[in-house]
Length: 274
Image (cartoon, rainbow, N blue to C red; front, side, top):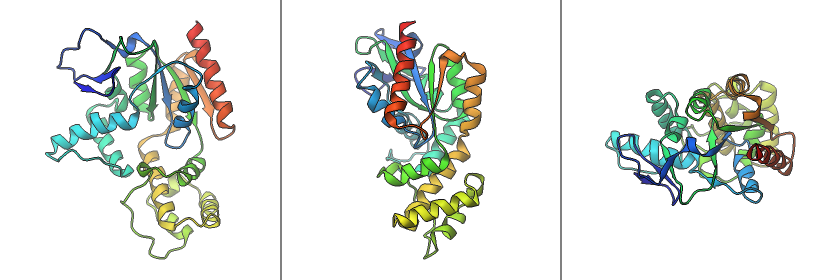
């Protein structure tokens, strides 16, 4: 059994669950859905000031302890922290190939100590279609808050924050190339950003005097993430297959964080009163 904190533990199926631990299905569970840079962390920080809930180990923690560590042990590789985002995508893709539910499958193997947790649980977060499909089946009473923002907005946010998990070493040096040329050279970038968007990104990055290599690394993360997860089909599945009362969609690019949090808080309070 892997203890994440006083309230939550990861318990492999073959182990006996201690009596005080209960399945997530026995709690009011709220799941945030969204790609990197949509504002999940900001929303959670604000919600903590307005609602009483138990925050489950987040996606990064579960990836580290449940997915990457297990695969490293399987490879006879010493457990090592992996911060390179592209390498992390490779690990989660391997896990998803074995367990189609991906992160949702790992989430379903968490158990909560009822003596330490409140009635409302919140998880940050799910991303792809397969994950929300698995979650909808495993947690039929769960509520989903989908946070959305365009790829250009998400990239702009990544460029403003200093998170070691937002970059990758798996890119070649720009070698003195211009910003636009280096961005255009990223594999499959045309599937995510149009030529016009790349021009706009280049102009903004140059105006901010951002290093070419740093912009390329973060743009690569966006491209690789979109290769693994499609927010459009993910959102469509939730809105088409679940009750409208179970799904809240918020565009975080068109309103300030306070408005996003207010909308989420009002919606959650309504669900808790029912």
